[in-house]
Image (cartoon, rainbow over all chains, first blue to last red; front, side, top):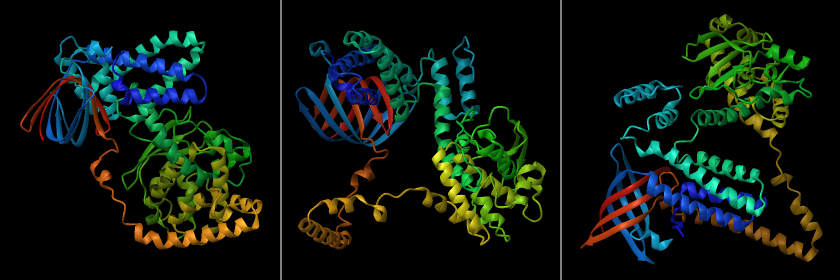
Length: 107
Length: 426
């Protein structure tokens, strides 16, 4: 199974909301919705691994860090995200990172 | 807008940038165009890559899920509906630059126009005394709108009356946002205020004033002859309140600029101002139209008094909204009737006590809420990065992050990366 990590993104949340709407109108079953989400996990993991090719640098100050169940969660403050072309500054950002070394192990 | 793909890398870059600046659709459309046509440029920012990436993910998921749907016996329609819902939500979130170039621009423009049309239509319809079943005609889907400018059509009152009486099409009765089919720009007038009015001649002979949507200070345009001012402000097009001068202004483009008598630009301004309101209401539904009619009738009564412009906005809305609570609430009364006497007394006591308590407590507790989160968050989004980590390193309080395959939502917008390296001090 691929990481279900990406369900809490714009793409993933909009998919979940759409599925919930269909469930409420009883056009699909919750079981089917779950299957769709699993399929989404695979697709997004594959897409990110294969179709995205860019680098980002960032710098900031670390507010909190947590490592639990092989998942790192950080909260940074006053962060600058820098790409080749543009720069994004945020006051606060939460980073959730799953283990990427052996992604096959998670599948 | 088509962009020719140059065979060299530099040409399309320049061309696109030129287009971006000159494009009247704003940055969004330009970015989308660049995304579509300039993917071969190596330095394409990930902002441009995202829509394609998301679209491909959606396509993959939908295609893979199709089998699952069929196995469950679910219709293909449901699958398409899922896809549509999904894409719409992504569009609404504005986290992505948008999938469809023109479609997005049109949708955004339409939404804005609809809001304005509603307001306009309310005022407009009120004035129409004779609008039995023609309120439905008022509804006009905004079409052919230019994204940056929203054109408002101001209809001649006389023509509207005539049209409504004779059952003309919606284009005649309602201030329409978009140019109805067959309407051609007739003349462009520039008021002293700098607003550009386009006079349009509709096929039915009515002449309309199209004005880009702007905020017009109606209050400042009160005329000494108070009758005209409020009417103009209230009703942009269907002016029944006997504004011959007003109609004259609207009908003939030349008069608009000249403005009969001393009205001059003020009338134009007012017309322009009114143009906004009716146009905003143009796309309103029949209910709104009817409500507007009522309001207009009420407003007409006040015209002789030279009501101020500010009264216009609240008036149309007040009678239109059916209030079901407060003084008009009947549910609680029914409940009380159904319950026993003792319970009623207790409830009344509780209510009184509660109300008194609330009244006393509100001043005390009003300052207790702390809104730190609002100050910190810019766009009501917690900036989140969801990714995988290659290596996390720490030395004393210096942390180094090596991340990969991430999706970021920063300041409300989405970004993706294949690698991210960061430094932070704890």
